Image (cartoon, rainbow, N blue to C red):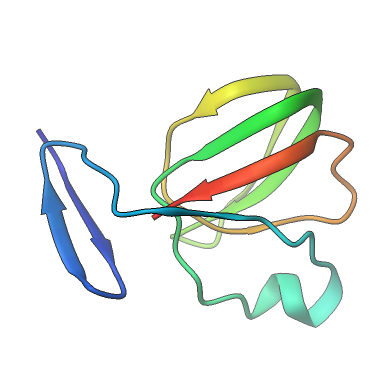
Amino acid sequence: MGTIINAHGYLENGQFSGAESITLTSGSGFDSATTTYGGLYVGLVGNLTAKTIDGSVVTFVSASGFIPGIFTAVSASSTAGAIIGLK
């Protein structure tokens, strides 16, 4: 079991403390994003470009459902929709 750190502390055993709708960002907003998500949920299939906690940029082709990982931003170039960030 891992530890997920969020604004309110940390949680053990993969439990999430909430979720919020993701606002797609580009440019300096994408580069300087500080919100941390312990995974993403994609409701509408499409390509998903996101930045991870270590600053790597990854693209998931035909993403849908739960995407595990620790993410800080989702690019406005993503074609996936209804994206929820898990906290």
